[in-house]
Image 1 (tube, one colour):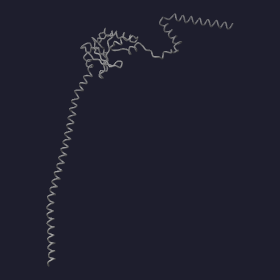
Image 2: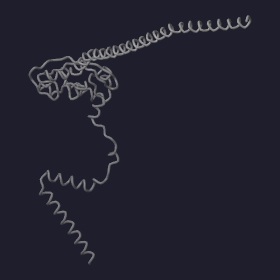
Image 3: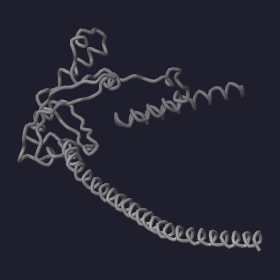
Length: 262
């Protein structure tokens, strides 16, 4: 009897909890019921990890980044893979009359260009508004043909595109070329300065050589004069010595004769 009573009480408690849960669920609106069901689902099933969750998932955005080309070739259009078809579908939605430019690194000579989207065409961005991404100037615009040189899929490519820009952004567009011209104009002046300095050094070197040569000439001239003076004195000494020796020999000869004939 005791076991039967416990069984009845357990069944009664379970049914009572079920009724309370149902009444609680019925009292919630659709949004709160959704939140509760999601919370209960995560609580009971969220601890189990999916085996494929660690694998990288390739999205459509990744596919566009890999397969997008600034100008599609005939080979790209003929490819029938779903990645190429996705890229082709996105490419056809772009408007390729004017470009949008990114001039954040214009001082390095790097300018990014892309085609306009539908929203930009409707707003007039790139045609009636400056084509620079960070400029909204509407006055003083000019259309420029830009020889766009870029590297795509490890290939060097070129394309002639149109860009609408204001005066300030147009100066950014030609910043690198202007700097190169200024550097070319500065180089001749620097060369003239270097030539002047080299001429000055040569003149100083030549003057020092001339002074050293003059000094050598003076020394040689002085030595020649000293030698001449010493040479003029030596013959007189020789004459005196010869006369003395001749006089001594005569006296000795007379003494010799006196000894023979006393």
